[in-house]
Structures are given as C-alpha cells and as structure tokens.
Length: 336
Image (cartoon, rainbow, N blue to C red; front, side, top):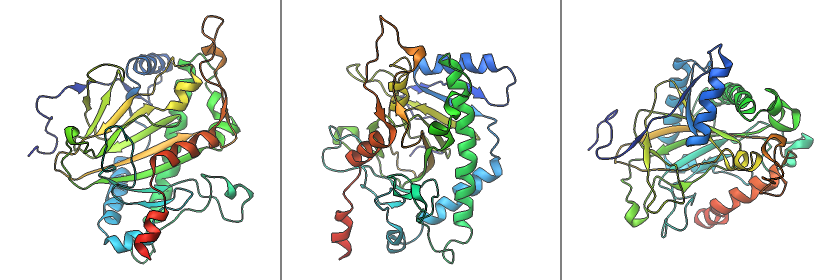
C-alpha cells in the first residue's frame, strides 16, 4: 500500500504554477495565473492569510464529524438547499463511466448563513445552515463559520488577479451582484479508503468540471486528485496533483469558462482512492443568484462572438446540482 506523502508509482504528476498572495509584484502574479489558466485551469495559492494552525483545526473538526455513527450523521442529512450531510454514493458526477454507483465519498455542505425570516432566504442556495448539536461537537459550528468567512476573503483576492488576467478592472468581481453577495458553498469531504478502479467505474469522485467561478481546495497529504488537461484526447491522460502543505489548490469552473468565452477553460478532474483515508475541504465560489453570466467585454470580438447565451447564476447552478445529486426521497424511504 502507498504510504502517505509517497508519490504514486508509474503515474504522471502535474506541476502547477504557484501564486503567492503576499507577493507585492502583482504583474508577476497575473502572469503566472494567466499561464496556469491557459494551460490547465489549476494552480496553487500560498500565503493566503489563513494560518496553518487554524487549517489543522478545521481538518480535525471535520474528522470528528465523519467519525460519528451513521445514525447521528443522518440527523443532519442535506436539505433541498444543499446544506448538511451527503452520504456515500449520494453524488453521481460521471454517469457515462460510473455505471452502477456514485462517488465513494461522504460530505457536508455549509453555505452563506441567511436567517429563515430574511427576504433572501427563499433563494435556492441561501437560508440557514444545518448544524450538528453543540453537545455532540462543541465549537464545531463556530470553527466552520470562521473558515467559511476567511476562505471567502482568499477567493476574492484570487478573483482580483483573475480579473486583471482577463484585462478587466481589478475590482470587476467585487461588485454586489457578483462576489459582494456570493453563493459560497464549503464542502467537507471524506474518502473512507475505497480503492478506485476506473475499469469498473469505481471512483472516489467521478470525472467532472466544477460548476461555478472558482474552487479552493484544501487537502491532507494523501494523493488522490487527478486532472485531465485535454478532455477531448483519446485516450484521456490523467495526472495527479501533489498535495502542498498550507496551500489551496485552485481551479476554474464552468461559469468562468462561459464568462471568458472559453479563453479560460474549466478542467476535468476526479479523485482516485488508493486504500487510504483522505480528507479535503472544497470551497465553491459563485456570484449572486441574480448575476447575469454573459460574455465579458474583453473576451469577444467580431471574429470571436459569444459562444454561450446569457444565463442567471442561480438558474444555472440549480440545474447542475439537480443533475448530479440523488433525489432526497431516496432517504425518506430508507428512514420510514
């Protein structure tokens, strides 16, 4: 069995650009990010301002939740707003290849906290979060809320560099209808140690591209994430992304591909299990529900007209989530 930190044998490793958020040379960061976005849509972000000590605390608290008995976890089963616990096999990301089953992972969604009596709470990805009882996991909610808030700050910093790389004003994505009032969804993830077998359609997470603007990913030191730089290649070539202590792995989502008229591509990725437990935290960043995603002015011309029609962010995301998650009635049957 592969040991922790050990590079997987006989498999390609992808070497990603590293964006240092503390670097005063903004132009260098823009250049590195642009190169990464044109090459593979994945890069590392370091010196992002979230302490290593706190990151370790978040992972520790995540582990404590997933170690709870299944009956306890099912008390906070995800709701129609995508808040709460997602059991193993709940999500099916690659139906063409995952013929019999979904992903061998369990997760926990935490979104932007909006009180039930708030006028915004009726929107698909807004509303109150679902939390384990404080008596079972003391301080758990406070830790996750703090991380959610800090990660949003990192995402906004990355978005400013992306804006400059697309020849926009640095604050383009800071507008209220964009990341001023975002749909920001954090997902704790646990891969229990199932060994993946692509020939049998068994994956930790099936091949997919993310739906939104960008995703920040924090991981432990167990390999698992793979990317495919050219989804149209036959056969597809998959490369592992090495975990980097203290860094976020950042990737572009489908919404940014639409926005940029395919100048920046969202990239296929998947997770292969190797028999070891693996923990990660994904932070999905999207603009507000009402934001109209349409081709950016700097990304179109007479020779390159827009490739996609405009679409509202909330409408687009709702359909993507519906397509990839199990109907909640499945769990109602099991619990009745």
